[in-house]
Image (cartoon, rainbow, N blue to C red; front, top):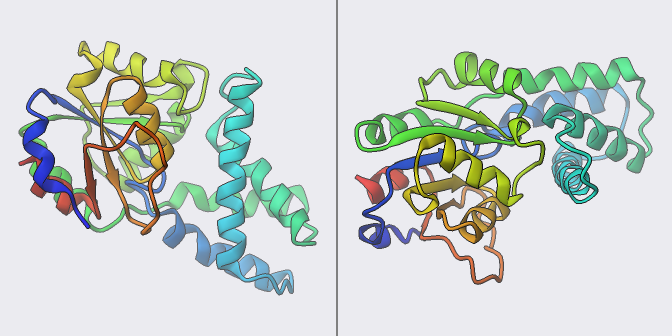
Length: 237
């Protein structure tokens, strides 16, 4: 259910910072088909949907682990690759580095959700629209230019900070680069941990609940809960 009626409580917001992976770009829809073909070629019996869920969860763990151990930003694609290797082993699937690389190549073809560009079009005249992502700069530049195909006002990679979201430095650095206070920025994400991290730093937060998942039991609740970018635009324009 949308809580768009709460939007009047956000008059100071001047910039929307968007998560990319799972929020703007449809990871499930883009990656499950090539993963299913790979598993079929390997004669694996593990369902592609289950392997994808394991892969996504393990990637987040890889990112959190790097941040907790203060290893810096090892790269979004590198954490995805390590997670894939782990999950294939978990399911008893033997894959060479070359086979892993072929599966990983699908990440460069990620497609946006169909509601993304129509929603952004409605928001562009009222707010600064900014990417704030765990992806590395080169990868984000490719995705924005060739997959999302949208001219954002800025594209911020956490690699400039050296940690993954939800580290507080990520959100504070983005606000500073925009010349804004944190409360003048609204973090838009389908990943609840991302909204929690932003809210804990004083940002406002919009949870795009694309997957019907519960939000964390935390004091750092979202200001808005919407199903997609159309509802987001409805709430903010």
